[in-house]
Length: 235
Image 1 (spheres, one colour):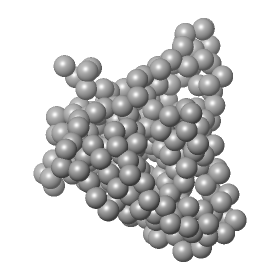
Image 2 (image 1 turned 60 degrees about the vertical axis):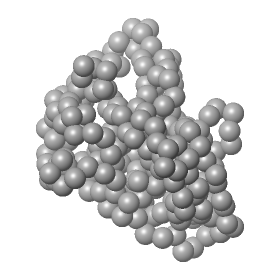
Image 3 (image 1 turned 90 degrees about the horizontal axis):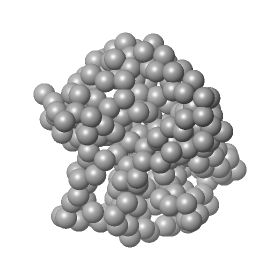
Image 4 (image 1 turned 180 degrees about the vertical axis):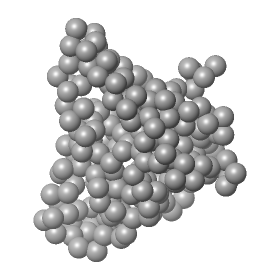
């Protein structure tokens, strides 16, 4: 995480979000007009590392509808710690299935419950198109490797912003499935990164808290202006 002098307060983040919303809406409207004219748009999936892809108009419409249901940057919920899940019932299953849909339509590879409006220690992930979407309830990181890697990450709660984050390359994560059964995941590479990203959400930590000071400052500036940001644009 960034040190206190490197990290803006929540009020500053909320102010940046509020200032940028109008410009962001204008930018999204412009992007929608371009798409309607037949131009495909590039999207960076949550968790990063996968290559930016181009999507057709219908896919982007579904993504926009999903993002409208996902808690966006500036909401205090994203800076709050989630509570343990204690009841493994049909309501939990329904919540998981809804999160699967939001993740899929939002073109993400992971989603945490706070992003779906619930302060519960629950996440879902699907790190490649051939994998089966999986839930993880009450996840706990048991071990992280000393070996780390820097890679670009996006976030469904901070659309159009990409920053580089240094994370351990390997992780052991323990949790439960929707029925309460124990789950142990030995993850590496992209999967390890996605799990760490989503567990951060459960503790109120965002990629803006994990990136270096220069990129955070530039990303915050872009948010205030309602613009996109990636480290390559900042060169």
